[in-house]
Length: 112
Length: 113
Image (cartoon, rainbow over all chains, first blue to last red; front, side, top):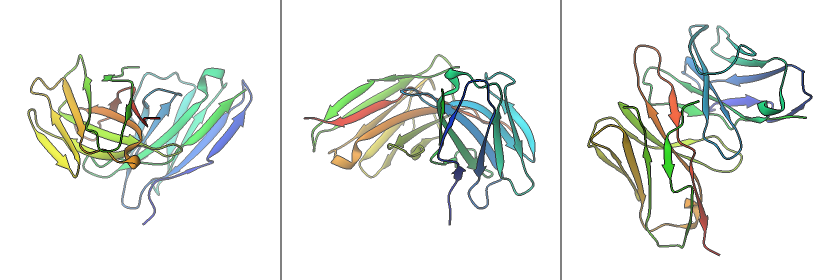
């Protein structure tokens, strides 16, 4: 049983560009959350998707947007990249119980 | 964004030693969670605590949910080399279909040289 899979694993982008990160939730999970983890910090909540709608959002600008597809997979889009967007982006999925979050290994984004 | 206060930031362990770390918050949570993150991986859930005052064990790990609901601690007994990694506490308030995790900055466990 595959867990949460994220792609790509690593990505280098230039300031001002746009990026799309992808997440496939664990089988049976229908809720997907995205987190940003800067170096030496804990993960910070970006937003959560359930039933293809954004249900909750953290303190991130509108440059961060997302989508959830009917098969529960999700995308995170970041526009107008800044150097400060360099981080590990983690996807977490769950179903039903809020305690059963499973995290993916993340996408390491470097903005140069 | 909000982060919980986790201490110590780092510590060195020798095999066989007991380890303690704690987490405090200015806000109340109705759930506390402890995760471990290895290099290149996402966080993995170690222990979940659902009730104030609750003490829960998972093998050599023991965690407690503070009575004020604003703190939690994690103990690791008789540490082994594979305990090395970064430990995060996380608070959660769940309601309806929502509920997002608020993380601490982490405690990094390393092996004593």
